[in-house]
Amino acid sequence: MGNLQSANRSGVEGAKSRFRGRSYLPRVSLCSAVVCLSLGVGLYCGWCFDNTVLRHKAIEITASSRLDSSRIVAINNWVSSINGVAKNDGYFVFAALGPTPLQILQKGGDCADKSRLAAAMLNELGIEAGLVMIRSCSDCPFGHTVVEARYERGRMVIDPLWGVDYPAGDGRYLGVGELAWTNLAERRLVDLQSRHGPIGKIATMPARDAIFDHAVAINWNKNFATITMVELMRLTGYPPEKMFRPRFLEDPKLALIYLLVIMGLVLAAPSVVALRSPDGKSTGTLE
Image 1 (spheres, rainbow, N blue to C red):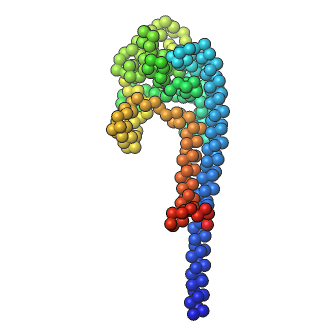
Image 2: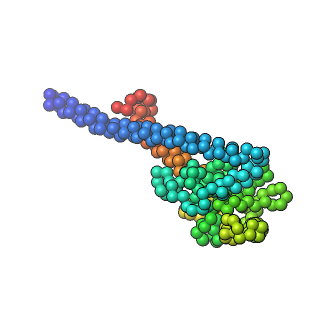
Image 3: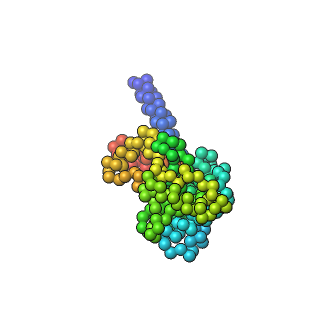
């Protein structure tokens, strides 16, 4: 009998030991979740500071503007005027993420960089805007980037690299949908180049940068996941062509904030499960 009791005690102690060993996983997950969420909060504070700088500058530039269209044009002209056209070599954390809008504000950049800055500044004014990528054919690589923004009468395209907008001539401006498969953008470019002559940046703008036939905000044909998403959006009645490019795709800090929050929530899940007893009642402890 004594041997049997001793064996039972040994078995119980072994089970407790194994249970305590397993309980480290939710503890580690919880600590990791706290770290991720804390980093996310800190990064969010930095992102808000950046946006404050962008917003104050955008308000300064558009102080005399009363309509969204005039604000959009003013931002476009100002961004076009800063620091040349070379690619901004700055980045935030990872080189693949590219520069933040504030880094572009400070050092300028190429078409993608300046479009990123212009869209962020417009967003800070409460104007919906996103990047649009231009290519020569449906299978060609993207060669130029512009911005499409919502104004009081629809959508309008601006080119922050060249400082170009596309007025319709009746007080309206033209968006990607109105410029595609027409020669309206090319005619606008020819008109600007003829008026400015060989002097000025606009004289070097290539005609391919004003062709919107295959322009897209998001490369929906990139992979199986994006193609599936397109079909699901169409099934719900929302045309993906009308979607503005999400800001987090063009703001490295915002992208990392989302990533850290998602990671934090995922890592916290084992701890939440560990806080539940087998009968579904909260134990209130991770042990």
